Amino acid sequence: MNFESAFLNVLYFSAVIYALAFILYGIRAIKGPTTADIILAVDCLSFDMAAFMVVLGIYFKSIMLASGAIILALWAFMLDVYYTKYVLYGEVEV
Amino acid sequence: MIEEVIFIIGSIAILLGAIYDLIAAIGLLRFGDFYMRSHAATIGTIGGAAFPVFGAGLVALVYHPLGSQRFFMAGIAFTVGVLILLIAPTGSHSLVSAVYFGKVGKKPPLVVDQLEEDLPRREDVAELVREHEEVPGEEEEPKFSFRRVGR
Amino acid sequence: MIELHLLILVIVVSFGFVFSYLAMKEHDLLKALALSSVQSTFFALGFYILAAPDIVLAYLAIAVGAYTALVILAISKTERYEVGE
Image 1 (cartoon, one colour):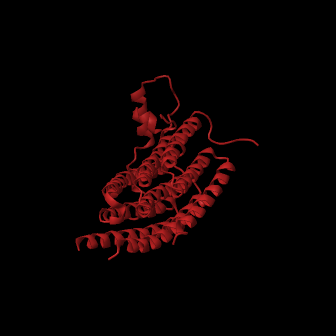
Image 2 (cartoon, each protein chain N blue to C red):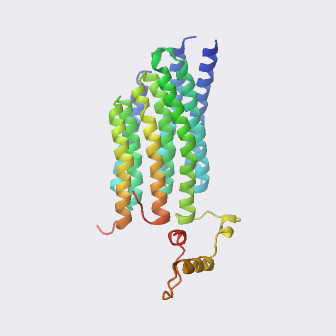
Image 3 (tube, rainbow over the protein chains, first blue to last red):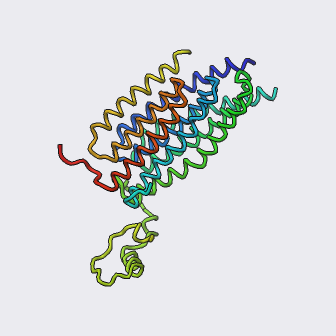
């Protein structure tokens, strides 16, 4: 069993589906009536983008590329906390 | 033999995670109000992000064209998976609580809202704030605010 | 097969362009900030596909983290809605 060609097929199907999902999340972020919908869409978008970065890092054969996924998942969480502190308490202590 | 089994399990996890992701995206686009959309976002973060990341870690563990770097790649993948498992429910809960208590947007038509019955009433909050702050000259009724109750 | 990630790059960069235009035309500053964070998330994947991991590390920490924190601090000290022409 050749691992490289088998992984290429897996990446081909999953990348098409991930690209479709990114487009749909983007449409929700454009349409979103309130700010919370946009924050929710960017939350899902960043976590799925981190997963896609790890899968794509195996395809590019580079571990420097895959380390961006940790940073993306952690900073996108801070956006939720900032928005919650602004809405509930009215002020943000950075 | 055991490497092929691990590779197939990881590949199935990646493909299934991608399909979960598409389902969550369609649900996020089609649902009516914010709370149902947050239900779709739960599927998108756990089933669509944490599950394929663990699958990619299993694939990277046996992927020989990567050389001796494959253990580093598997470590990064498992770290990202554990971080997403910790972070995504916390973020979703904080966002939904901000929308509910901050009264953002329009409230959906509910049959019964049991959280609203458990909340402290307006007179109780006013009495609590009055005995906490001890300002006798203030006549006006204090507004319902989380910051003034908490501190 | 070799053009697949280039197709994803085209999609990501065009979505980033659309979101930067929407953030520019918005009068609610908090909503404009959320749209700007969507744009920076899309551009991070663009830099990733262009094989620049150092720029990804710096751009995420600045455009998603520090920029949103500073602008939310500025909004909470001043006003949320932009009034006038």
